[in-house]
Image (tube, rainbow, N blue to C red; front, side, top):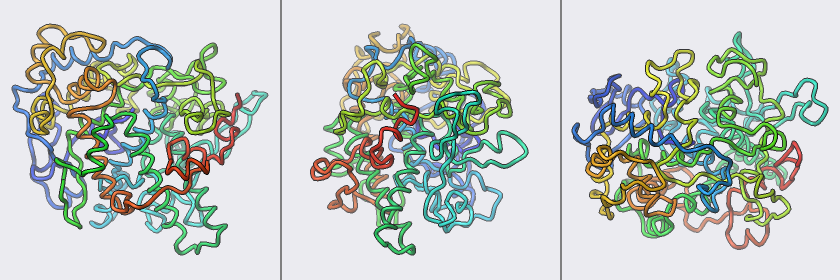
Length: 562
């Protein structure tokens, strides 16, 4: 599930402060009142990920009080369970895009210094590591020449490290074997299991759930395969890494613009922004201006992915309907950041469990997460019952998100004082209060888009509102809920209006602000598409990226077999 929250890696989901340009540091007061801006030294400011505002600040009486946030959060997290094919699924949106979206979030919001704040980090390193650009810094960190991030790379300083799974004792099939390249690299050393399980990647949030972890592993493969191709062609080692990184980043950006965004945002909005440019978010930056991150995107618009999450998935031939289905809780469990990589033990105790690498039987079957026939490979099709679709974007979230595991927001082993604080919807609504986030109505006025009508808050397929709560939302609706309601009533399950405009413009600016950028290089075209006809047509979708990374081989896209 994705959200551009940019939490420090030690405090996922519970960011304590935001540095908002022009305002200072908004520190969480630990209560229900909005945060007060604090002055910051230049170093303190740099150490905070830099945010900005697109709209006005909400007034205190426009915010929901704790009782209202509690009620709304409970209404939003009552979606009944069910596998990916139920009627509330979004037609044409494979479930893998939920977690690709989370991977993108962590690229946009990498806190490159959070794991080394006590080290001697230069101002230049701080600036380089903190720009919200779509440049895959969550994959590359600060590069192999950086003394901190060299550990993410192989001895050649060019290829990224990958990990090996842990075989299942007593198994008689392929799951008994360790499989190289199908887990994230892990630290593997330390006195505690949690230390040895820690992912050896620039952003540990990409081991927050198993789906995003497996996608991160696919990007490692994508980079490493292209490096091998360049090396085979005799490209000098002096330029090999940067040549590979440029190609990987631009193919990634192309896929986001032409495959990912059209699945979640109204196409007319995308065409306008990428065809005519931005109107509202940093429309005319200077050549040296680095992008900022609007809190309206971070705290509201890009949290759409929470609505897309399913409570269970057809994961592979082992974890599926009729056997043991892959529940959302299990996708948290089999990670080193939120869980313990083990079938046993307490998920909220990072030292419990017997596995220190991903068990082989939990390797993903990517055919169940992305639509390969849509990408020209009908031989990689699975049955409709085996294929996972996202939930549609609306104002409902699956019930498991009402009780997050403590590790998903850095709270282990201590839990919150109130059970409602485990509810993801409540956390989203509370964070908006903390920063005084503009209401949906305020943003509709600021962006000059048609506002929602009072009748649009009537009860329908989404969250069922009480009359007093509806009355409050008609007047002052939290931006996150407002954007989901827009998608629900006007967007056909895609962001439109306020939400569509914010997401499209931030993506455009984040690509423009990358060192390697298809926005600034408009004549660039993808060249790694495996299918010759799709390549000639300028196609490069997520399935193309996976086909290239896994060499087009079914036994790599699905190593456990059909």
